[in-house]
Amino acid sequence: MVCSASQLPLALFTSKSTATPFLLICDYEAYDTDHSLHSALFRRNWQMLGAVFGGAFAFEMAYDTGMNKLWDSINKGRQWKDIRSRYVEEE
Image (tube, rainbow, N blue to C red; front, side, top):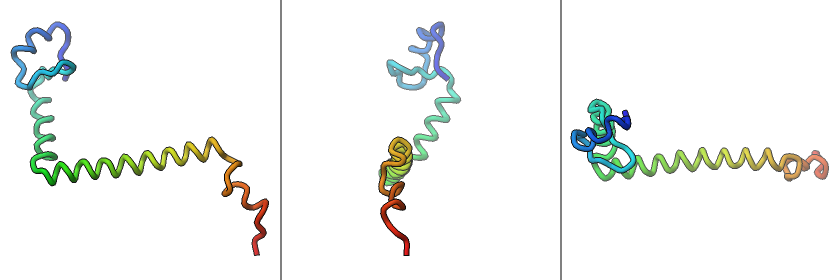
């Protein structure tokens, strides 16, 4: 939960978390949830590397699939797979 403007001066002095310029956590339960998630994923170096590599692989697959679909939709009818039947006779 993000602090409202009226809680901002109080949150600077009472928040358990380290204050960042963009996000201050006023709800201790949200802090504990974020902290436990962070400690579960990044407790050891190999866990962090696995999470980073797994996330990068998933992002790459999703991005590649999305860009291929976008490219195919923009260039429909101009690619070899679309016009192959006009030039190649099936035996």
